[in-house]
Image (cartoon, rainbow, N blue to C red; front, side, top):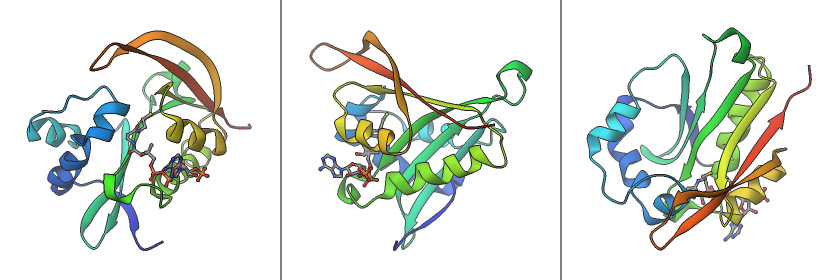
Length: 165
Ligand SMILES: CC(C)(COP(=O)(O)OP(=O)(O)OC[C@H]1O[C@@H](n2cnc3c(N)ncnc32)[C@H](O)[C@@H]1OP(=O)(O)O)[C@@H](O)C(=O)NCCC(=O)NCCS
């Protein structure tokens, strides 16, 4: 692994913005092709309910993953969401997303005592779905016409990974 994983910092905003406005990310997310840099800067502002990690190679952001926690809601504190996982378009297929998700799973399993980690993924995102299944996520249901695409609508899968204990 020739990159390091660390928490995201405000200074990562521009590098992350380049990834978040890439065509493959727009296709796999709710994002639009043109978004202000401020949108990404705001995303990286401190939030105690978010864990945002990046993969960095030689000072460049090449991957990002975001975990949403609900510690302030007593009856939902056991549940978390994998809100966003992205890899730079030129670095896909190197295991970067897998490393980022494995790190968040490790945190969920240990420090955060999470029982349920869920996510939503568009049904045609076979690369992401394959990865999630390899990491223990299971399909829970299909949500029809969940997201507008450039030329229609796409269904979305609800997936979750349960933890023992
Ligand atoms: C989905 C995404 C995060 C995967 O990132 P990545 O760093 O390429 O993922 P990895 O290299 O860790 O590999 C992911 C899996 O895809 C598989 N894979 C690799 N290249 C592939 C390819 N060309 N086609 C299909 N699957 C492929 C790998 O086998 C791997 O599965 P495994 O390790 O469990 O066997 C990345 O493609 C991306 O940023 N997509 C746009 C944003 C997005 O859709 N995010 C998910 C929203 S729910």
